[in-house]
Length: 292
Image (cartoon, rainbow, N blue to C red; front, side):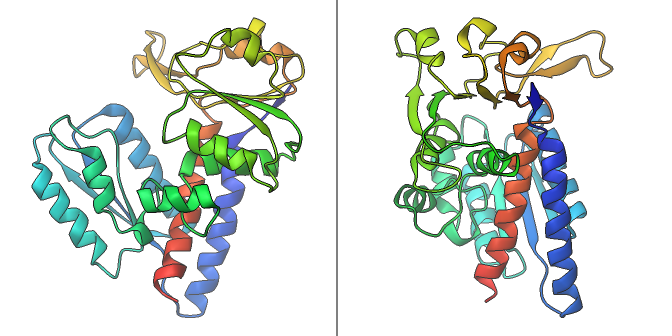
């Protein structure tokens, strides 16, 4: 078993980005500026946004964190999105999801300028991804591809099974992995809650991606010996032995599944850091796009 160490891989990416930013500074050019909008006090969202701010520091980017109380109106949030769209100092920004129930997430997502949509969630960027046109790729699927690429995982001709068809991970990843690219050229099966004989389907996978948010869902008997397993899940579960009172658990029962895999990503330290690294890549790209 080999560990797909997203933490180490993302660190290398951030070092590369930091060198690029250092060069821009030496040439007197603008450096990337990422803004993040956080609504409410969800612990997971706060941890994730703080990690993004820290990543900006490591890459030499500027960052701005904008916080609102959970009771913020949809109208006020949309006005802030418009202001960020029109702010030339901001190269890219994200509105951290999920949002409170009284706010229409799709309405907010669609209000973001596609050229500053570094999360890659805007319908225009999703459409460009489907057509393989230049645009911003969703950060988590892009991070998974980069993790596979930098660990020299062969994907061409392989069977890939993805558990979970979300618009954020499963569906875009299924499209990216079928492309005539490297990584890519997989035969992909996208499974979901209505899939029959899921265990048997999973056993056909050379590459198995778990992205459903159900802790320890994937067990050893669902994994083909020698398969590559990517665990996208991150769920907080109570743990009295931890100072915080909780720990992060993936969708894969790591200890037992690791015994039969060729490669496996851990939780934490696998896909999560790669998602943030992809966000940094998109921010640099947005700056270059908006400041030609």
